[in-house]
Length: 278
Image 1: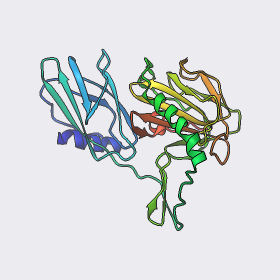
Image 2: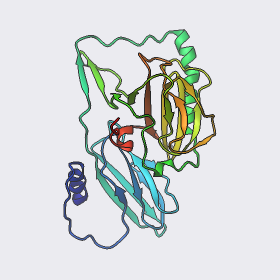
Image 3: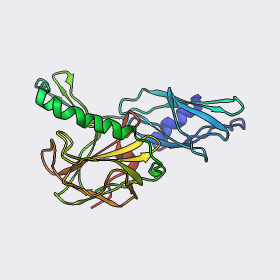
Image 4: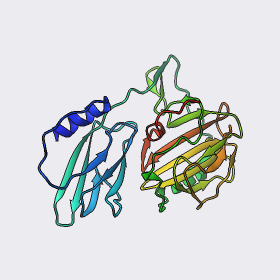
C-alpha cells in the first residue's frame, strides 16, 4: 500500500515514480490523485458485487466504472474495498492530499446569524426542497464527462475560502463565483437531469437551479436572473439553462456554482480545469 501512497503524492506534484511489477490479480484503478475537494473516476475489478468508499456504498456500472469524491475537509487517508462474486476482497488505501485554502484573519467578532421566526418560516421549506433534490436518483451520465465551465469569466470567489473572526471560523465558501453581467447565459457543465428549478427566489440562493449528473454528483447554480429549464428535464452539456443574476443574498450579479457528491462538498474548478482565457 505504501507504493500507492508515494505515487499519489508525487502525482499531485506533477511527478512520476517507477514501481516494481505487482502480482497479477484484480485491482481498483483510479484516474488521477486523491485530494481534498476533488473527484475521481475509477474502474472496479471484473465481478465486483459491492464497492465501499470508507463506509459509503458506491454504485458501479456494468463496465466497472464508478465515481468517488473527497470533501473539502477530507481526512488524510481513505479506503476503497471491493467484494467480488467469489468472495475475494480487493482493497486500496488512498493518501488524500491536503490543500492550502485561502484563509483571511479578521480582527472583528463573528456576527450572530439573525434567525428570526419569519426567516425560519421561509427557510424551512426551501431547505426541504434542496434536500429532496439532492436525494433524487436519476439515470444521468454526466458524471462520466469532462466538465466545462457553465460561464466563462473572471473567478471572483474560490471554493474553500474562509474567514476567521478573532479565532472563530466562519462558514467556508462552498462553490466558485464567476463574475458576469445580468442576463448573460449559463450553460450545463455536463449532461444531467433537472431536480430543482425554483419557482420563486429563495431567501439566500435566489433563483436556484439544481442538476443531477448521476452517481451522487450534482450541481447547484445560485442567484440566477432566470431559469430556462424545468424539473425532470434532461439537459446536455453546453445547453443554455439560465442567466446570471443577483437574486437572493448577493452583493452583485455573478454565478455561484456549487457541487456535491453525496454529502461531500467538492471544488468545481477541479472538475472543469483552469478557466480558459477570455
